[in-house]
Image (cartoon, rainbow, N blue to C red; front, side, top):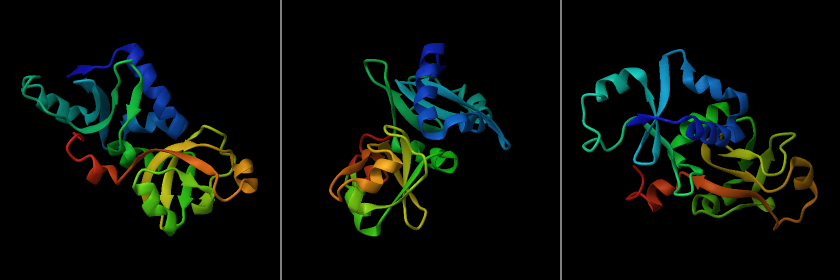
Length: 180
């Protein structure tokens, strides 16, 4: 368990900024204490400093995980967000997409969101912008990347992809053996 290097921090914060923008500061400086990011086995964990001090008594090879896993670094040093970060991204998301009840199951099985399943989208969402996907009942279902801007979504055909799937809460069931 070690702090992130400057390069790792930059790569991870750039990825998080796609989804929550300048609200990134609210993740670290919270009213209930100071939180930090730590790297363990190529995975980035979000943990309070209080818990981190208590965990310093455990050796690194015995430690499985600590805090909430936000994602992992690939072998090419790119950062990939995990669905476990959704609970922390959703309240601060700048761009949101709501999908219809009929499209929820398709999204939760790992498919992209089509125009026919789109309920609402935040105004001024640009193309390739990170978005958090919600059900019409405002339950965060996952996150992805906008394939079309808000203006383009109004005039595309119903079978066009509007949000590229990246992660969803269905992964808890589909990939339960690999999520840590």
